Length: 121
Image (cartoon, rainbow, N blue to C red; front, top):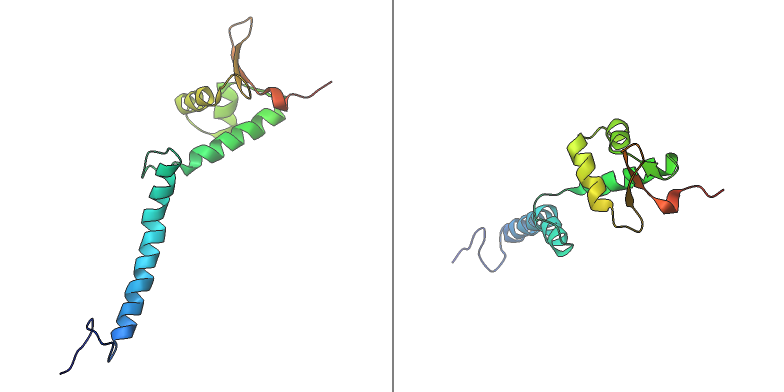
């Protein structure tokens, strides 16, 4: 009796085929399944893969550090090149009252203040 391909026992190319299937399956799992699982476990929305959001927040912190701890939506839009509504949504979501505070000046401008990044005199 002769077995070929995917059969057991592993004769005549069987191990090679299984090795290719294992390597391919490992690649597919690491590339497509695990990022989804990790994002959902961190409270994400699944396959949206908004990895740029986190780096946008980091860039906003860097921008605030160069602006003495205060930025406006316009600062974020012009420096980071994102849409005004998206910049406003990100800044509002970052505003927690401690690390980032939303403040309105006397002339009505909205500033987002980063107290930890303000220079001390």
